Image (cartoon, rainbow, N blue to C red; front, side, top):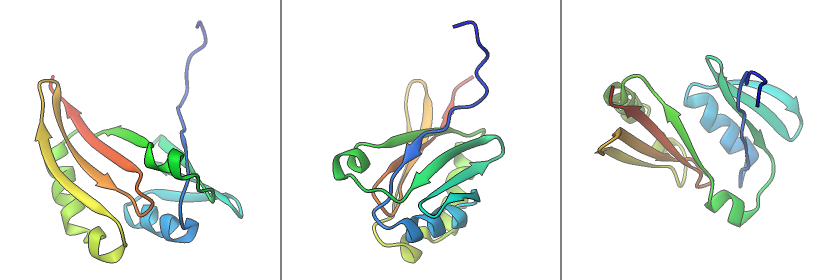
Length: 121
């Protein structure tokens, strides 16, 4: 392709739209309401669409990788947010180190798996 890409914005679903909206705002994303059943969440210039739509196979197989500049610091911040107490079904998994870099994991209230990773330079 010869066109310059500007952004990539995945669409994700939710078992409970209002709880997921609250979760992502708590996580630090800025919400822009698109319609009664869809919002756009962003951090800096990166974002995704959250839909009031639930398809079990889709949700159960959705993973998002967000590259961060310091996974250790990101992990510490995630732990202080107490997300697992505030939101049902939220799970955190500690940092794992790999040959390419390291990452920690977060399951949102619907079960969507987020990878927060840092590549070795």
